Length: 124
Image (cartoon, one colour):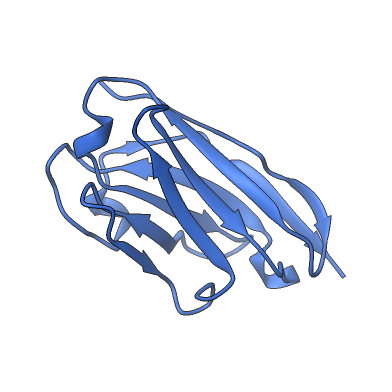
């Protein structure tokens, strides 16, 4: 069983930066593909970024060039650095994990473990 705990959300102004963190329990983090998703009010949960256990990274077009996903296997933590935030980035952000050894994936059903979410609100 893997538990994921997100932190770092908050209320910021457009153009500001935030860094989200997701701490994972368990001994298999280094072999686990991790992802960030978000759900804006009235919308479906959508893919934001992922980092595979091989450290390949992928981003949604809407955040490419502004967001950076990284991981620390020594700390069992994945990060999402968000720069140049826009009001349309406002959402609940979720950390997710695939089963150990699984490769890249972009759909929520492909992720087995989920955090509770952290709110990010970007004002004008």
